[in-house]
Length: 286
Image 1: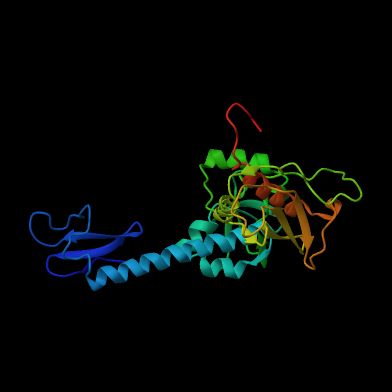
Image 2 (image 1 turned 90 degrees about the horizontal axis):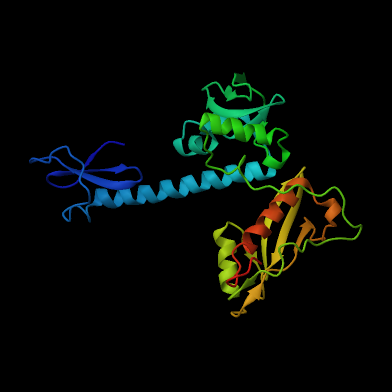
C-alpha cells in the first residue's frame, strides 16, 4: 500500500503494521517521521489505516491458529488450497518452512507455484517438486527424522511461525496398567489463586471449561480431549493442578493404553506448561 494524503503537508501509510507519517513539504519532505503529528492523528485516513492494521493482525492470528490446528491433528490439506492461499503474505509467512509430507517424502515447504506445484527441500538438501492431491503437516511426534530435521533447520536458518519441529513432545510409554486412566506427573502444582491458573491456561491457548483446562486433538482420525483439573470455577482462593486425563468424543474417559501418540504428547505438553507456572518456595526445586 502506498502513501495517502492526510491533510495539508502530510501523507500516511502502514509501515510494518503501524500507521506512519511523512511530510510532503519543507526540509523534512519525503522523510518518515518518528511519530504521528498532532495535525493528522484524527484524520479519517489515519483511522482507516488503524482499522486495517487491526484487521490484518486478526487475519494473521487466524492463519496461525488454522495452520496450528492442521499440524496438531495432522489433517490432510488439499494442495489446491495451499496454492490458493500462498499469495497472501499472512498465510505464506505461516506455511513457509513447515515440514510437509506428500508423495511419501518429507521436506521444508519453500514455495508454491501458481499451478499448485509445491517446492520443498528434503534432508539431502535437494529441491523436490510435487503436486499430490493432499499434503499433511505432521505433528513432530510422528516425524521419524525429527532430530535430523532440527539439525538441518539450524543449518538452513529456518524459523517457523507455527511451532512444529521444535515443539516440546512426549513419547508415550510402551506399557500401562490395564485400568490406568490418569497421569499424576504434573499434579500438585500450587497456585495462589484459581483465577491466576485459569488465566495462565488461557494465555497458553488452552480452553477453560468448568473446573478444567482442556485441549482437543484429532489423533489417527479420532477425536480426543485432554483435561487437567484447575479448581472450582468460582473459587477465588489458592488451588493446585490435578491429574491429566483424556476423554473420547462421547465423553468416555480413555484408558491410557487407548490414548494415541499425538493426544498423549499434546496432553502432556499442556499439563507440563500449566505446572511450570506453579509457586515454588525459595530453596526448593519442586
